[in-house]
Image (cartoon, helix red, strand yellow):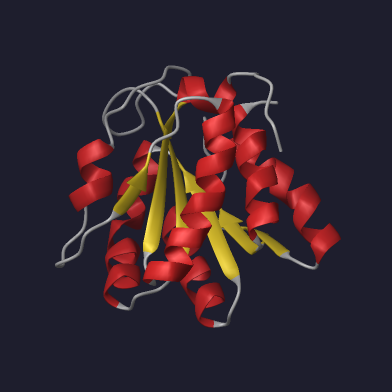
Length: 176
């Protein structure tokens, strides 16, 4: 199973019922798969106009009681920072998947990197401690997605799943 697909499958198992995102490589397959899976379990999929709308949509969905998730990459993650800070300050449980790619700004969408680590921990204003989980295989992408939802609910906070392009696109056996 591809890493991004294992993330989507795990999100459904963890109880995700709302996903909002703007398509961005190398995270696009997560949204593609959830657009198929969510309607089958009574969930909602929304393709948003940008990443700012995506983060705010999952905040609202979480406030309405849904387990909510978004997925993005470097430039989209930068656009989300104000909303992420708001989610931390309002103790809003949600999951933010960041599939990293090379370079600043738009960068190179087809190459992997780990350049968003510091941004994921301290990218926005405010006094908070982010829970960041970093998978290194398709199996860990599956397992840590479930943990991300559990931690978000337990600690009433956004949780960031920080993968890279290789982990997102690798095909490996995954035990469900």
